[in-house]
Image 1 (cartoon, rainbow, N blue to C red):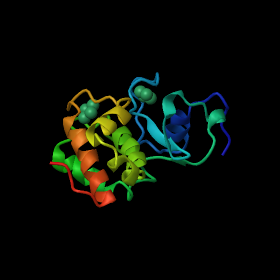
Image 2 (cartoon, rainbow, N blue to C red):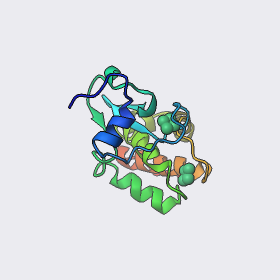
Image 3 (cartoon, helix red, strand yellow):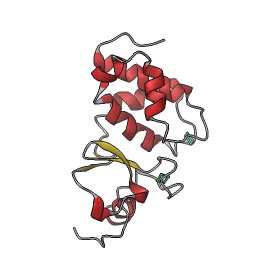
Image 4 (cartoon, rainbow, N blue to C red):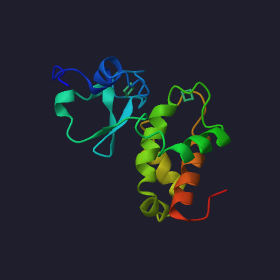
Length: 148
Ligand code: FES
Ligand code: FES
């Protein structure tokens, strides 16, 4: 598929490909609602020109099965209210979960998760439940004790 180079990745995904899980909220690269993975890296698709995309793009639609445990943990932990930020949170968390062994070995896992997810803004929940849910999944995937 061809698209003008100046178009954003978010607009091509949402408007041309009907992949609408990535939300556009601020449209300025400040909130993370539009996060997708580009070559495995969390990327704000609202400020990424399609011409600059190198590597495969993974949206939440593509990651649906991979994030099953994250979705369940978010639900159990009450880690969303309006849910507008949740697709971006889950996509970013999916990238962290792929590195679960490495991240769980860090001294301060909640601090690391908070830091990594700091670009994903949530106006509803505060961040404790989100951080807790992601830590629990990372620990489980790494075969470590789930933090209480
Ligand atoms: S909508 Fe892309 S960072 Fe806010
Ligand atoms: S759940 Fe509403 S912004 Fe995060």
